Image (cartoon, rainbow, N blue to C red; front, side, top):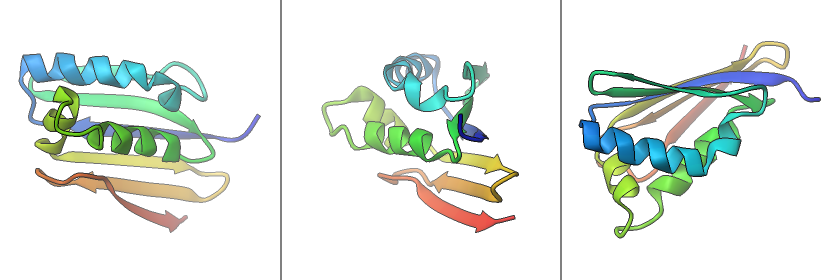
Length: 117
C-alpha cells in the first residue's frame, strides 16, 4: 500500500440546488477521493467541503474536479463549478508532498501549486 495523502477542497458560494448537483457529480467520481478510507462531503450554509485521501498525492482528486469542469456546456455541474471559486490543499508528510489548488470564478480548470516540505 502506498502512502496516503490527505486533502480538502472548498467550493463556494453555492445555492442549495447547486450543492445537490455538485454532490451528485462528485459521487460519480468518488473513487478519486477514497484511496485511504471513506471521504466526506460537508455542507455549511453556502459552502461545500470535500475531505478526502489519495495515493501519495491528491492528483486523482484534482484530476476528477478538472474532468467535471471540462464536461462542457451541457453539464449543469460543470457550469456550476466554473462559476464557483475553489480552494484546496493536500499533503503527505513522509514524502514531502504538499499542494494547493485554486480556481477563481469563471476559471475552467484548477491552478495547481506544489512544493516540497
